[in-house]
Amino acid sequence: MRKLLSDERVQETFRYLICGISTVVVNIALYHVLSEYGNIGTLTANTIAFFLAVLYAFFGNSIYVFRTKCTWRRFWEFMMMRIGTLAIDNIGMYLMVSWQWNDILAKCVVNVVIIAINYIFSKLLIFKKK
Image 1 (spheres, rainbow, N blue to C red):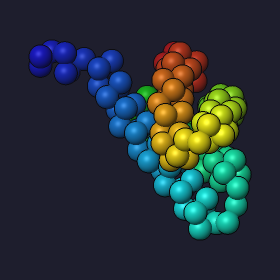
Image 2 (image 1 turned 90 degrees about the vertical axis):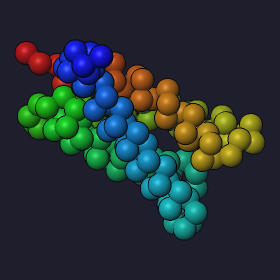
Image 3 (image 1 turned 90 degrees about the horizontal axis):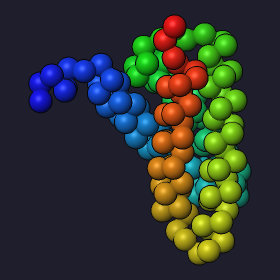
Image 4 (image 1 turned 60 degrees about the vertical axis):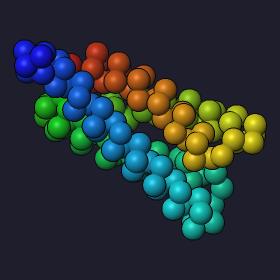
């Protein structure tokens, strides 16, 4: 067990889960504040919360998870990849809310899918070690 816990890949995955969960919390909290108190629509609040959470996630992933240097190139690659997942986020939110799901529950479900997709692309493309 000790050997497994000392494995760098296991530690990296654990750090990613911590960063991913905290990013989801930031995303959902911002969404809730914006949609509840910002007097703006669901998709607008979702999009603003998404971009602020992505900014948080970039630094968390770069510094804490993958332990790579923060560069403008990585930032733009990360941002472009995340914009792709924004489509999944907004489509998922739109569908679930139109199906009468609670918007916070819908946000949580969609974020589980997005975390998995983001890990794969971050690990294999953006933060890969040379």
